[in-house]
Image (cartoon, rainbow, N blue to C red; front, side, top):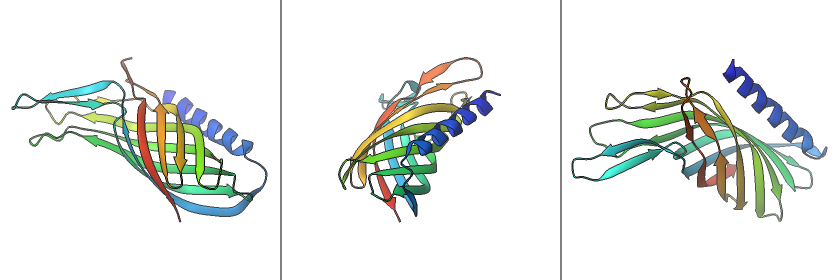
Amino acid sequence: MRAFLLMRTFVLAASAALALLPAALTAQATWVATLDLEYGGDTVAELLFTDGSTQELKAGQGGTLSFGRQLRTRDGRYAFRGTFGYKFATTAAENADIKMTRFVLEGHAVRFLTPDIHIGLGPVAHFGTTLDGDGFMPDVAFDPSVGARFTAGWRWVYAGYTVMTYRTGSGASANASALGAGFSYAF
């Protein structure tokens, strides 16, 4: 039931963002691909290697590859992007495949301040979020989560900040907020 409510909230927020765009939306729709690299949040796993070094895996850490559609206003000042992607983070262990994976659904309203400089915000949902301990630690499945994402960029490069919290069915939580950089390509 919680997953249904989170997804309904996401759909309503994305619909509201689309409704706020000027009525001048045209059929100028393009495909868009994004690559994001983020780091931050609470430590969800800490590995100790045989040489004495350690590595932490953070809840918000990972690389995301997404694809979707972008609609642009006639005047070019506003755009709305809807993307679906996969976020992945792994460790440097040679004898284990400890990783954190999740699917990402994002709606993003973008305001172009100049033809090259833009800012954006919108809802983001992570679902299917799992921490795979590969037998070295317990696997953890997180509930679907909805948060917000803010970006500022120049042309196809941008910096972003995601605000999000992951929760488990047992009530444990982890801050999954992350700071990162990304690249987008409309085609």
